[in-house]
Image (cartoon, rainbow, N blue to C red; front, side, top):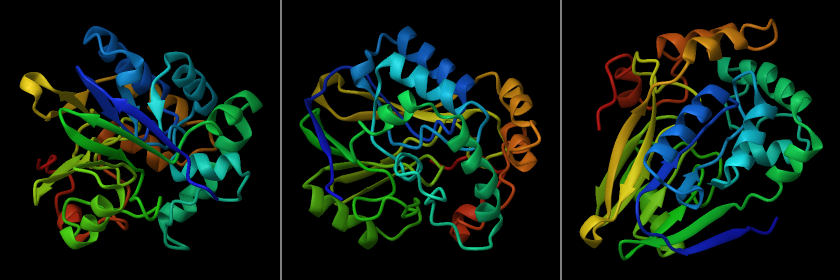
Length: 275
């Protein structure tokens, strides 16, 4: 399939970066309020994909995202949904707990989305490019080469480096792995703002995003946490269809399992995010 790339050209002023809304309407509502409070226009709000996911309100979430007018690339979930595929395409190990859970939440999301929402998902590009504070920026989901590739802070730089070369970028903004981090090397930045739909396995119900600032024409970024009505999100997920383990994670901030995580990130479970 041809890759659709959206070039936003030059962005300036505060810019909001986030990922993995995961059908969490309450988190999206809270983040939209942050953007409005910070006077960040919708065209400067960029999602790394997976608007749809584990939580209970996929249709409402897509419709609010569309109404807001924020930018997003496709995640693996959007690609699978708009192609009416049988699974989420998350690249979970077959037979794993994550794989088993996906056989619950993915059909649920499929069953809830309207044609209007699916048509909207079909408009999303695979990648977004822009310049910011004289740096060339590319937005990817997993990696430039594989939408479902899990890239973490501990992932070797030699795995990250080809992404910068292929996109001719100074900064890669990525999602998919669920954890916020940044990795600076060779005057390049790999920046993952984290996700707002699920906690970051840090023992806290708050979720993560990033704000860019080009003050003094320099590329500045700040990781931030978002407080939202997680109790309502968790309650709505207790519908007899979605995995109860995920509704607990919304509250506890601890993942049910760490099977996708490298040893370093797995060992930090519940100890907070090390930025």
